Image (cartoon, rainbow, N blue to C red; front, side, top):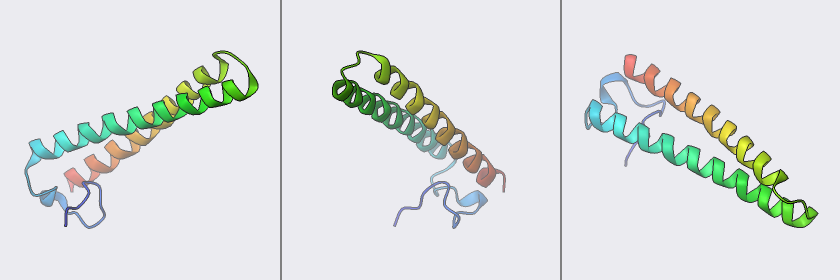
Length: 88
């Protein structure tokens, strides 16, 4: 069973068992995926809300910015946990 990079069960040198390069590649992939999903989710929710309220780009922009902000926060937490596990 594959373990997540930031799992509590993973110890320092065991980071995914594939070496540091693979661990960083997995981290960068997850960073991009999280940022994409949260940003698109916020923009799509804003688009739906704009259609319901008949406002043009207002909630799309707010949803985009909110999603990007949530994605940035999630990525920050992900990177912090990853680097903490890597140093141990």
